[in-house]
Image (cartoon, rainbow, N blue to C red; front, side, top):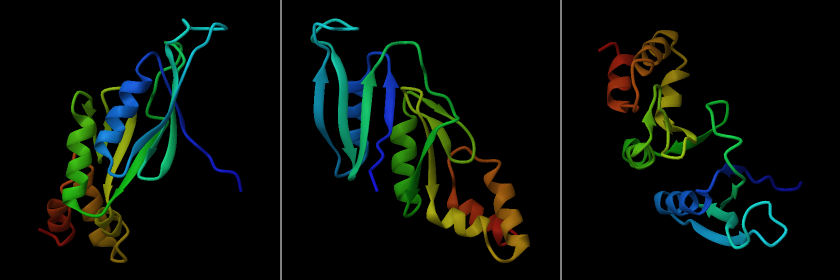
Length: 157
């Protein structure tokens, strides 16, 4: 099966964004930078595309112009091992961006992320419907997910 690579459309910030994402995610690197040539459509020498990997997952950032911007219809979910890991991504990615609800945020480039501790999904799908309902109700009041608070709510506290 062929691989798929998300291509992120930026106006002019592709290289800055790729560097930022590589600084946030461990084991990440920029693998290639290409530039516009004489054929355009942007000035020769400007960065056209940046290929990078976030912990082994390939991405491409394209400087395509101001015609398109990100919205919440597309987001990247970060499956976090625990609260500490979730907090790392939450605080790093939301800096200069916008915090939303239920673990969602927009980073400084307008790209949406879902920062989800694994334990949250266990609580939301607990076989006990009362626990699951209480956990869901607690999560719906949060921006950044606070696992301790979701656990307390699930337990009836």
